[in-house]
Image (cartoon, rainbow, N blue to C red; front, side):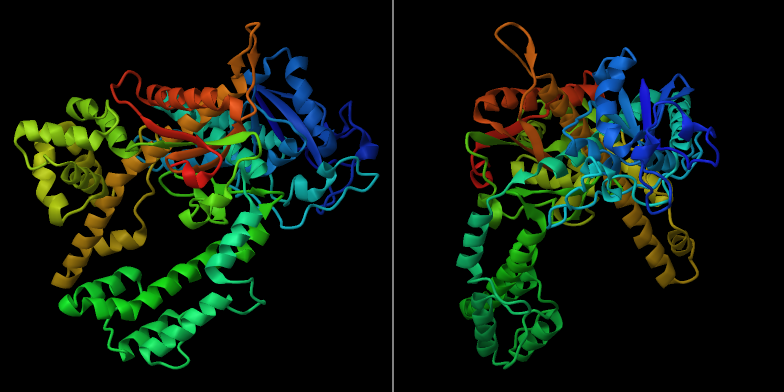
Length: 615
């Protein structure tokens, strides 16, 4: 059962003029928003394509409606799929009111997936009935929200917590768009996979919103102490920290370039060249390579660049995770990561801000569990080659993926076959090169050995690459489709007028092939991660058995995610149960995608008070 929650249509003139005048509406409690219309939600029940419009409610009444409506309709709350134009925006008022829902459908995210899929030869028969924009979450402000006035009832009457913007389609339009999306899924060739993708993407939006709301525990005092040790006291606005300033002056003296500004790559490169350090850029690896080329003189060269390398490290800390970052992103002892679900074309998440896709090692000790609580950190091992084994049905690679260390198992298979893949490091280089399209070095040299050992797996990658080289599109296991070739790409690859143009065309084709080769693997790995997190969340909500046999939901919550790693936070006594849930959820996600494919998804799991000691 689907229940669409969207804005009620603008009220028409007259006392009884359409949905806005349905019974149950308290017109005195409504307050006009910026567009002049009241902030009201209209629930629409969608059952097998039929629409039933319920009385609209104010934003303040929405949480109570969501709590009570399933029972009023005789439904199990866990079977209801709540439908929003944007979960990132519209779920937030419910979370603020302490209401969590079991399942959802994000019309904007699903529309984006379905619209892209219509450009392939095996197109899903779908055309949007109304545009639904994909909205990123609004990061938490450094200051707390303004207090509600006495006549407001709750904070949720505020426009900033409700339907911001005037381009949001009304609930009836959203309901018709949902029907169009469900019809498209029902008529698609792989409808079960596509339905799973859209449900998982929507569930990901739900999880991202809850992570933003819950936040990762963060000790500001420990973070500030570390900054003071590394950089010195907090500087005045517009000034460098003391230790960074001292280092900048030392670099200018060492290089013999007075007034050198190491914050400017152009100025620093000029200073390095003036000092005889001939490098093409100020990147760390270029500097280290220059020092290594010195032979017997390498020690002196290392001394010349050591200050520059240290400055770059400290400057990165100051600008990426310094005091301004703390002010903006850490509130009430929590870092609130803002994710953009499906923000990468492969379906991987991106960070809307604040560096949510990475917590540098230098600041991880500030991530501390609350008293009596623990952080559970789970990292999936070698996900992408396991995905390749499951997608391709390659039995030999699947056998290697049945254990904890796939690369070691591949090396053992290589030794038995008498190939050059007999060392773990070479097996890893070969597999990663195959998935990412490496065409030179050890990866290219080892490709024939991989092809003999794993013909189905390498065949899948090469077919995807050829498709990209021809300007075609590929899809992940569940059906997310790569973008079509851009007109500029078609123009480049179609130009064979000169030798130079032909060379550019070959380069463009190889680049497209590398992209599609990895798209099918990285995108499917992202789908596995969505299913993993969704299953973790479902099992946490279901809980564990009590002494009398009933189920008790766990207090532990997902609080951080990056690619193949999740972080959960909850009472210490729940840690063993959480460990089991996370482990079983990984295997369940594999079965959900690939059925009985004999590929395992092992995890490294630890529970600790500090994120720094959890790996």
